[in-house]
Image (cartoon, rainbow over all chains, first blue to last red; front, side):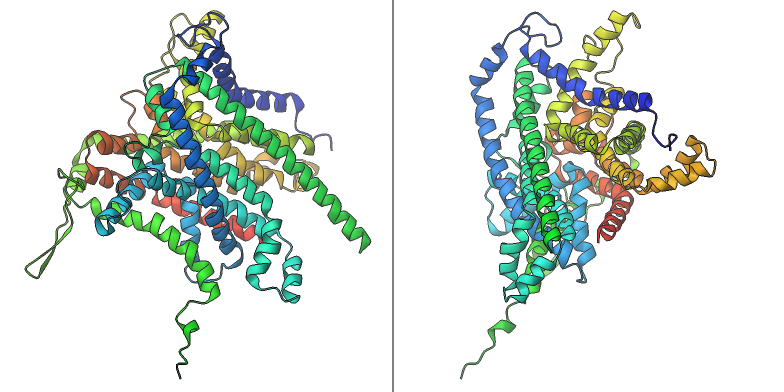
Length: 281
Length: 302
């Protein structure tokens, strides 16, 4: 058995190197957001002035508000459509066109965003020519694009959760005379609520962060936060961007870690209750 | 008596449940591709939209004009050819580097104690949740000539003159590995963690050395994870735009960047559509493979 255990020092070395690679850049970014100098990589003293500069940057603030609005709309729509599609993937996968359906769910996970960007843009242009709608490009077209980006993630999270479900609860409800739609909303949906929450959060961050698709689908007056960041970062380092990045990273990290801990505690509680139920049976 | 059976005219519940998401995906995912193919055969023009229509109806004569000029140009142009080769090569090298760093990490996370595993995996996923753009930006400060890496190496005395990494292909490789590493680790971990360790014990009992046991037992059992992870990195990397634009040089040839420039700088939508078609063609086989393995994973869960 002793040969079974992987060597400790080697494991620490590999993981240490790996996590250093993943986190060192982020750590440097955060530390130097408090640097006084405009030259980002030369430390000249502690200062929070770049954070104050953010508050006066109207272009940035307006773009951030727009991005948050689109992200809220995207996450909500993506969860509705993604859950629907994920449920079909898990339960109704015996129809003739299913391989095509699965393909349309899986492909957006890997397809380069430039491809999706130009295709959706051409669709909207063709639609405008044919029916005069949507007029020009803006929040609506970005919204649809972002939903397409996120639906696959939600659908895959939901379908794997639905597959794990014990069907006895749903069957019991059916036996008691509940209609399928009611069973779905009263029984299935609460059981997969964790998947819905993580799908919503993932969609929210994906939308908030998207640059490429947005660039194709935005019009005048719909400049999102990543577009502003990109246009500035292209010119090189910018201490204000370090400050913005730091805020972003802190908010997301706190959210993800808290969400994770919460879900783990919910899981543990559920396991305990299941155990109790089985013990009584 | 009007006993029209209305229910006949409406699709059944099951069809509706399947039909709605199907239609949504069809309209916003598949149909747009067909449009891209169509527009790659049209011609750039001034006006809205900036391309000529393919079909015309004049005096009861229906004409379809397909302009194959863009394809001819692309096939004959050395720069385009070099860009394809270079995109595939850059994506391939990035994938191999991800595998070399990701496999040992996934392996040791999977072999860590049960309580540590969740935390370690969360730490792999956390950077994926934070902004992609910000993570790429973070590397500019590190890779620049007067950046942190060069400062550090010169302070150590390893080098006298700064290494040129920013605005080179090396910068792109580092950025790609950094951005895509979580996608490699996730499927590898999923396969390694559910591996039956008794198989390894058996190999040891039969006298296999650790290295041989790894090559003959662990590696084949994680084959699907390697393939899935590699595809998750390779396919999007081929069409990557942001990383070569921010970290690469002007000589870093990548197809996503060429397509972006045709579209936004030259305003040549038909040419951009042609480049897109070529990119899809390039990715068809890897995409089909990815589809195949996703389907397999789904079957396993059942």
